[in-house]
Length: 411
Image 1 (cartoon, rainbow, N blue to C red):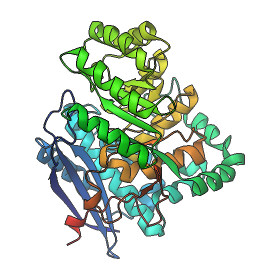
Image 2 (image 1 turned 90 degrees about the horizontal axis):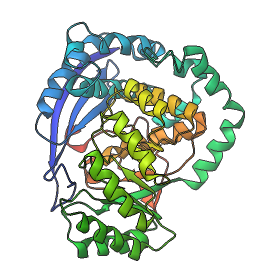
Image 3 (image 1 turned 90 degrees about the vertical axis):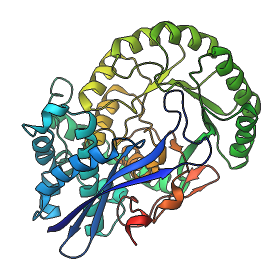
Image 4 (image 1 turned 180 degrees about the vertical axis):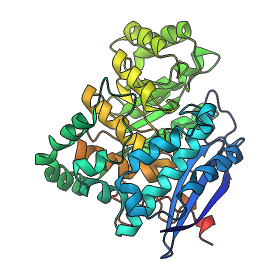
């Protein structure tokens, strides 16, 4: 059973201009890390991600949630985790601070992810393997489908997973042989000068990446257009180029600049405007078609994702398992996306450590397309079992757990 809990505030300053975007110019990549230690000495580790200030607030909230797990057996907890998740996320006083968003939901993600990590370690398998070997009923028992009944019932969720079982093993064998494609976001951080963007594009191609992403959202649109043209020129026509505005534009600005950026044939435009403005994204999607929108790294919960899917505003959903309520809510949103036929390409940052497991589950058990997974390497050196990418492809993690153990907490 869970004997001890601990929550740590861990922060890493980045080198140079790494991590910069149109809104977040000087980030400090930070984790609110929950550790759950059971009576056998196994430690489950989960985290939420912030950019520095306020990380301590998330840690305090995570400790409140984690304290409710003391004395619980992890197998019994996970057998009905959907019920526990609903209880925690609707805590009568903490819920007021969200509901289901902001500091309290980030904190719940940290605790939820620690539960899944401990569960996988208890069974001695990587998280992806634990998830793909669960039955549809066992998976759905870990989910909270409340407020989704108009789109996804408990029975429908089970049936969706059951319908994929006949081809499950075939997908598993194929993806484990080929590996999961990555794409490189580090070519074009916002504060990088043009020449560094050019050099980074060449480096990414040499390393085997066939897709890459540039940060846009400059006050002067001409800068965005110039830099996007540099990436397209270096990458050539066969490489996917994505553009990410990090919520910088108003709707009129987005319509104008996105239509101009069509000239470089972007694979998607990411987070063009405020993440709460579902209808603005729908208006924009219609105005710039066939150019596609990707969004979700700042969408906080399954209900808002439901609305995005219902409007048809997003062509790619970038749900983040350390922004929504953790692995459980990530899987719930992936099921919604599968119903609507919309690909899931998680926002990753350095949380690829966790998402490399979840994209395998999405593909193998849910039948989602194995498209690609974002790669940002800046914190790789801080993990006990860092992701491995060879020739632009993620190698399948083999160590028990979710790959989220940090070296600094193992000393």
